[in-house]
Image (tube, rainbow over all chains, first blue to last red; front, top):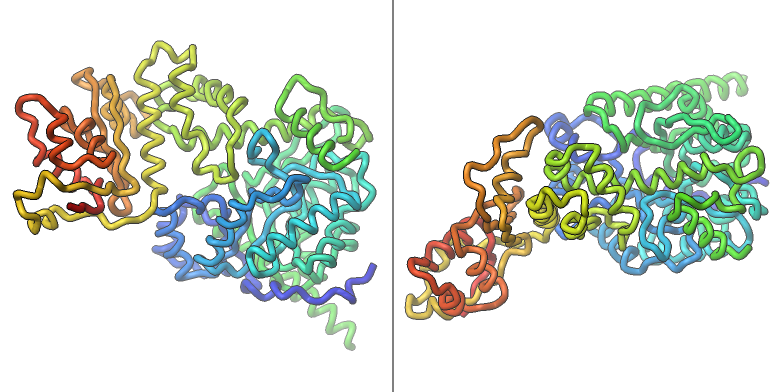
Length: 300
Length: 251
């Protein structure tokens, strides 16, 4: 399927085409003191849904210096249940207050009758689930008054009843709702290893022109019942070489894109995280120079 | 299978570790895989346990990591967050501790946890301008007894029959803390007039007095309720104002 008929997402230029990192409370004093050159900071929306206090004061200070990316983890867009309207209203209020460059959420569910499960859980890919997810994405975009980015998941199981590939599923959501996409390159590798597909083939099939942001993160390793390697999207360590390789490939195909390094567990000292962001920027530059060289050769 | 049933089956299997992974979910061998499914179970449990640990660091220090892990695991198994706003999660953990049989030998533990919860609530409370003591100077002394006070949104009052605040203060860092000199009950005020959360031990009677004011009593009514010799409402009131616990008054 060609991307030619897809309009370019309006969200693509909302953040600078540079690297950013997830904002962690323990780093904020150092960031405000040193004011390092960085493309943007990303926050988990739910961490700033308190009424007031130091978290908001410090985020105001960061926002005055840097562009912000608002990343939701709790909307449960991939659930068969209706979206939580109160949560949507909280999100809209946060977006009005901090004017983020973009808003992203996950192709996953996280709430059920029992309550909120605090994990990104997988869903089957069928015409029925597609219709539900599109309805939810529409609702979010209406509530926020702007297009959102939808992130590809990392998964450990797939569903027997799925009838649509993940890339076709995501492409169709983008086509029907006009949303942009967040490509988590780490998630591509994690799912590729976990389900035995080729990560490059996933990129081939992914609607790259709709991508407005990239995520990179470290993963952990385990084994399944049959002894197959299972990668776990742990966000607890440096980005691995295989993810960097895939990232450079993605940039070479698509051009520069705002890129986030995620590190949410066992959070390192600030200089280590900043170093990862610098590495992402260097990888982006390297991939672009390779791409330009290729283009020059082609022109000759 | 309809979408809602698939997710229902997934959620049921997540909630009950003795259940087999859902028949609809498969790994690379095209069959359900217990270890793969366990990744999800583990993510749910560990992320919620991490949220409880982050909210109650002193309680954790008091009982040690292993005990706290077991206690919070038992809590999260039956107390899922009601919303995705995790910063509100586990506010009911102190009540759970009070009923948690293995913690029975530590009767002060639930009160220390209540103080930690009050601290977090104060931290995230709405902003409001605290009242200045000087503002009271403008009030006609004859009218003082008619004053009513609006408390600052961050202000929290606690009363413990143990030295909960002293224990809490003594365990702010790692390592062995000295037990409180005086093992007696404490009345506690948590406030956050500006950026910093403060914890104070109130003088005797301070809890009842402040609690009455917080619930709408006039200064005169709150004073009357404190029917013991030597209770000085003025010094208690000034203490509350200086702590930033009050934002406005009206006659």
